[in-house]
Image 1 (tube, helix red, strand yellow):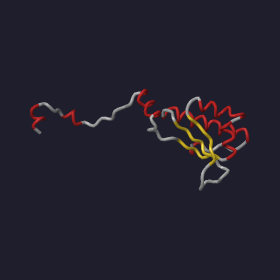
Image 2 (cartoon, rainbow, N blue to C red):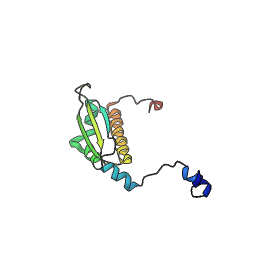
Image 3 (cartoon, one colour):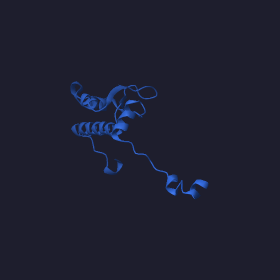
Image 4 (tube, rainbow, N blue to C red):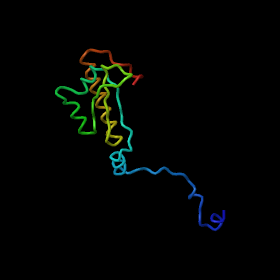
Length: 121
């Protein structure tokens, strides 16, 4: 109270502010292992669409982030796969997820599957 009365501390010193990180700080955090990796559960046929012919699709994704398609551990069905996305900024990991979803939509369209209702997206 003395510092406020003396004018050393002002009310704005007590305001809570969120520190926004720069792009460089975000990249450093991602490389330091402070990120939360993304994991997408894929059916076996869907995993093949994400990998692509001769691995072309997954190689494109690996230009953006660390991406691997692994067997799903128990309790999941052994035929299912996990798409693991890590070691990139949040924006790049989300970009990979958009590419994966795009690959899955294109494969479903090619198979003639019914598209999901727009409100479920």
